[in-house]
Length: 284
Picture 1 (tube, rainbow, N blue to C red):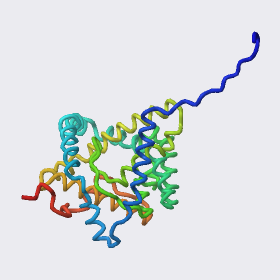
Picture 2 (picture 1 turned 30 degrees about the vertical axis):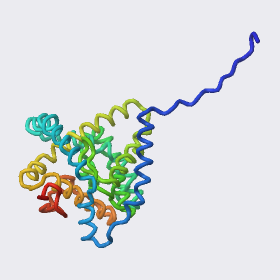
Picture 3 (picture 1 turned 90 degrees about the vertical axis):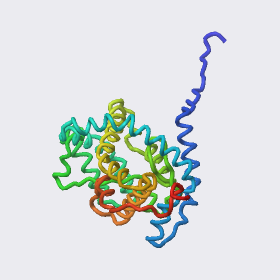
Picture 4 (picture 1 turned 45 degrees about the horizontal axis):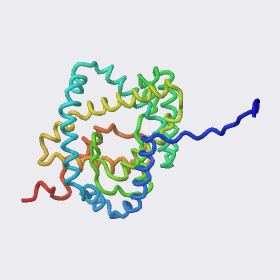
């Protein structure tokens, strides 16, 4: 009819393929979590179980070999140059910037772990370093007796009593397990900064994620170099080191301690790394 007002209902925008994939992956991994909780209760037996629980080791070794090729040929050369030629104060600022952007997610996990004092410390760190620390480039908060600590969803699940599940070698990301893989996905979906639609925040988050990965790999160079040189089986040594480090972080979350060691310092403090069971490469 001429002149009639035509009203059409707006159709909801379908989720992107990436969003659908992330959600479906999260559902599958969450369904696998109940089976991950059946682990030994004795601390020694639990540590040995978590280090050696690798039923897909042949496949994991193939992924590990690909990861090593990428690391040695594509990542290490520029990162070693970064470590050698970039001044310490600049590298510290890069580390501080990436770490500051992780603070909201750390605070969320502190609350989920019922570590409210740590959550308050992290919140204060974020406010102080974002304002007085030049958007996080300078760690003013540490000088104000507000120390940094780490917390993530994999650690939170461990504090809740969920077992690690089998070991997993993630493409490009390295050693993990079912629990921490679910935690990684949950961390992406549950990061408070991800809900801020401001372009500046989204750009800063992307830059911070990249700089944080570079900084972490640079910090780990000496540890991994020594481990690869001195271990009989680098794959098993890394798997064991990762399991022990994650167990230490879960214990720290349960205790609600005021601070956490740096990731590379936690690994160095573990001591000699020995495989919990013979590797498939050790068989005749």
